[in-house]
Length: 251
Image (cartoon, rainbow, N blue to C red; front, side, top):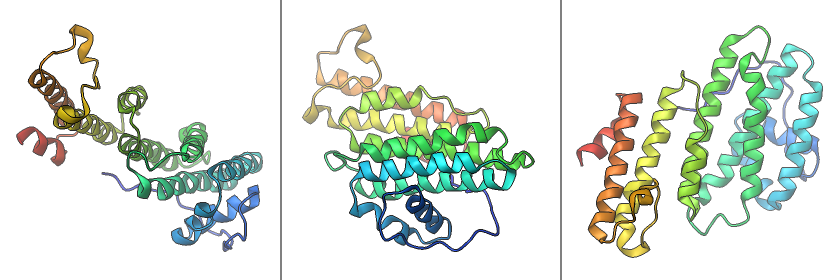
């Protein structure tokens, strides 16, 4: 899996840990802490407040950054802070991944999606003169969405809906590796369904009941395993070096 890369920026001021987290300035300081490698200090105030409060502060900061991004360096700084905001969401959510644990954390999901969505226009050419930044931002958006998809399938009971929503978003053609990883995760969902069907009952992850819901347990397991194998093969077509997909096909 790709390491999420942030675009480079020099000459920024030292960040300070906010004593509270309720304003745009507070969120800016948290984002700057993260960009300076102080992830633990940046996350600490987030776990002490309601997710809705974090969302309000972040959205106020996003609007402020957009309003100030009137020249290349400011646009690049805004893009980096948006990336940091999206990463902070993963820092909060991924340790809590697991069905039944993530109740009430949807505002963080919204926060992360908002940050990544605001990167989209900038992805074309965020600085006006650095196409490499655009490439890094496109890559960042794709891999962030893969990470969020992984969190969602681990934390939600409505995994079929999560799969449908996630796979409905097309990644750029240049991000075949990210698409392959997401496709592999879809296969894992189907494989997990095959193994759990005897305990959890039938769940139609891939629209298999369109031709009639199978009546036997063995038929349900077989159809889920076939769906998983299709996803693993598709992942390998996208990324022939995808070791995990190859191992699951061979197992």
